[in-house]
Image (cartoon, rainbow, N blue to C red; front, side, top):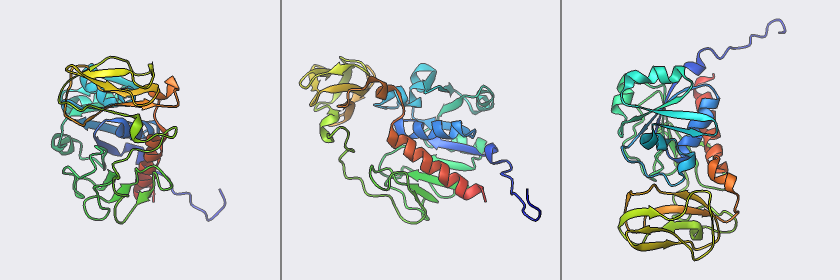
Length: 277
């Protein structure tokens, strides 16, 4: 080190406690990236999450007890007292705590990330933590959160927004392999969901991928089943219940998507922007 130049240490930054609301695909991509960066993370979820891309969603731990995504494991805890022991095992604790009040009161997080992806704010407030981050539309930086991360595919995906909001929801999913709306599986009937195919399985256009009671859910394009709801969940009419990837690569079904990785990068930037000064 040259004389007169002081290198400022990043003291204690990895001791930050980060609370993530939601544990679906995008929130899990964020959690994975932050865990890889050695932060202490806790995720909170609803009792019956409805993730479609279940193989890359830590929310599956709510049903299975544990869920591994690309080498990182999340473990369901029934009470906050178990969180510390899960951290010591290098896993991500996940707690059923929909509004986050229980986790916030005990953990007093340095960072709160709203990763519910509801396209609207479901109760997150700017005073919930020293740094509050909202993913996607529904939040306004400087009002209900400190930072918004852009989630719309395109030029600004993953951008850290310090004032204002993300791009509005268009209702049209991002293009993959030349398809947008066609790659989604939706049910036209309320009822109980029964998959007929598995995630990672190849399907052809016109094939029945699932049924809701006795009403078929049919693939509009050929490809690989990238996401599908769990057996026996109750669904509403018009609800997204699955996803077909026209690129047909099975490995894509079991790995974090480019979109989730980009959003995770934006969140990591926001945390360092706040605390690495």
